[in-house]
Length: 146
Image 1 (cartoon, rainbow, N blue to C red):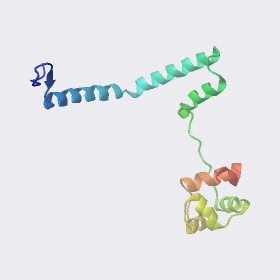
Image 2 (tube, rainbow, N blue to C red; image 1 turned 90 degrees about the vertical axis):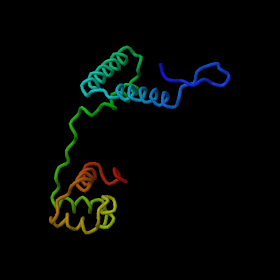
Image 3 (spheres, helix red, strand yellow; image 1 turned 90 degrees about the horizontal axis):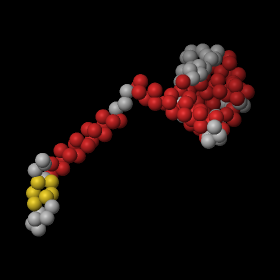
Image 4 (cartoon, one colour; image 1 turned 180 degrees about the vertical axis):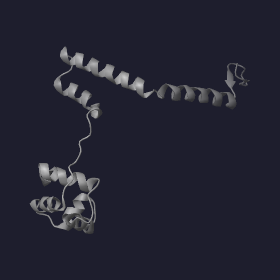
């Protein structure tokens, strides 16, 4: 049993600070172990929950919006969309169709004006946002990012 000190009234024993710390440490360790779920177990749990949600949707317990909300949280199963590399002329064409100067286009891409100039001349190849955003603008128009 943990060491205790008695209150002056002699009623209930009070744990010492070392005993309290040990008890708190043990409960923290147990909590950490319970949170440390393996990926395989997490995957099985997710699959089980999605199956349950599907069945509840089929029975009419969940409406379409609730079912979509649940399943969209686990949309990571789809492969990530890949952006098509754009040629320097295509990048310039996207910018011009959006009726933007290099400076304004650069601001929307979060790059420098010089970087946009280098992309349009073919000195540099777009990566990151400078690769993705012009593709989005080309497909959906400039309003997609504004």
